[in-house]
Image 1: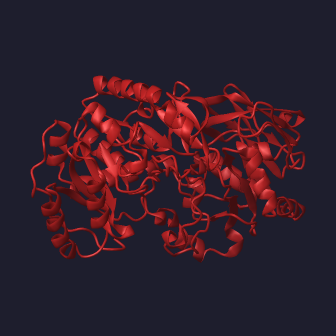
Image 2: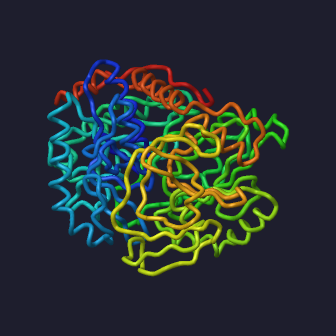
Image 3: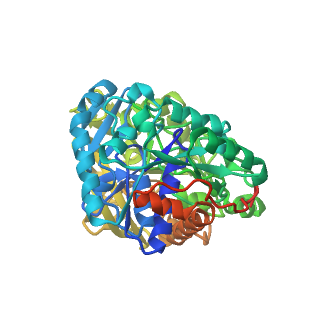
Amino acid sequence: MIQGTTSDAGKSTLVAGLGRALARRGVRVAPFKPQNMALNAAVTADGGEIGRAQAVQARACGLAPERDMNPVLLKPESDRGAQVVLCGRAIGTFDARAYHALKPRLREAVVAAFERLAARFEAVLVEGAGSPAEVNLREGDIANMGFAEAVDCPVAVVADIDRGGVFAHLVGTLELLAPRERAQVRGFVINRFRGDPALLAPGLEWLEGRTGRPVLGVLPYLHGLVLEAEDAVEAVQAAPGTRACEARGCGSGRKPPSWGGGYAAGGTCCAAWTVGAAQRQAAPAQDVLRVVVAALPRISNHTDFDPLRLHPRVDLRFARDPAPADLIVLPGSKAVRADLDWLRRRGWEAAILRHLRYGGRVLGICGGFQMLGRAVHDPEGVEGGAGSTAVLGLLAVETVLRPQKRLAQVAGRLVFAAAPVRGYEIHAGVSEGPGLARPVAELADGPDGAVSEDGQVMGTYVHGLFDEPAACEALLAWAGLEAPGAAPDMEAAREAALERLADAVEAHLDMEAVLALLEGRRPVRGRRRRREVPRCGS
């Protein structure tokens, strides 16, 4: 089991890298996360809902994502409440106190899901959530040490040295564990190291002597690693050509502080998304399309825009406040009516109307599509208080929110360009109205979305809309980019990232010690590899 000293220490990334490394060695391996908190979700082939990180890890292991890989998914709807998804299906919205009372039921489901995977695979890589040292959440824990003890799973603790204080993080985490929990910890991994490895060696020796546990490896800071993040969105992005991680922004979708089991953003460097920055900087202004995505407080599935981040002729920005753009995008939202109120308070409604008067384009995806209609009705209080909200009125549709979600993988073609499109739907709303007579896409199970009569506004329920290169180019051409070309091959980019990650794991982790842990043996101290760690910028 991989646990972390903090959220975003690199747990998700390490599990993905280990999964690909073991799969390349011929080991039948699967990922597992007992409890996840994320607004970026994935849809399984059988119509279940799991965290995005587990879908990425499944791919790393050469598998299709399954419900058992993430039996408990928490999707925050406010600072105090979250929707609970159990074994792929939403079972209701709970505040923190009610959720903790639910844990005995959840523990049974979590252990059963793990046992089903363990019976089918030679190895199961378990990812913890947040930090195991959150002492206020120890009772009934199913995300970290509570799970490790329940199934007698050895633990490796990973810490992010780029944050600073890595030795304090590791020693402090160990000290705050109960003695029986401490016994589960078999080693440490240090993540995101850059610099002279000789300067780190004395600290590693001290850490091993202080704790009696080996350092299993020191992973380098991998620039430009293209992995789908589970949460953390950059609300303010760097200028082209600079390190995007210097401009990390708002923490949209941050977990309610009393829940624990924090987010795992995949552990990748934000600089992954500066790919193509040099081309953008060199291109004439008229050859670059400015795309602004509203950084909603409860933004969901922002991985929809990964292809645009990588496109050399797209300047993509997430923004809290309106900004100059050729294309404005309203993304998915876990709380559509509340996020629309937030947009209005920050002046987005007037800015969108002005943008359209000057010939701009507007795209809404999922919750953003619902915001573009005439009204959103929530008679059962699915996303908060029951009621109705008049929305932007740019598409002739109305939406009714219902407790039962639509969860499906979809494929078809864009109507206006005949380009293939592939993605997934994950939404609670049912939209109706005359605007649906002008759909965005024709899918295998029927039409999707709506286009305004003047062609300036589109709304769709399809996540992953830009993943297919032909669809990406068609949508960018609609938004005003002449002869777009150069749409990234996301399948190839993601595969290359997983291979590169596995290479780093093989080079910088003591794989013999990892295999010993998988076999239930204790790793031998002092056997970690003394490889040269790449310096900053490599």
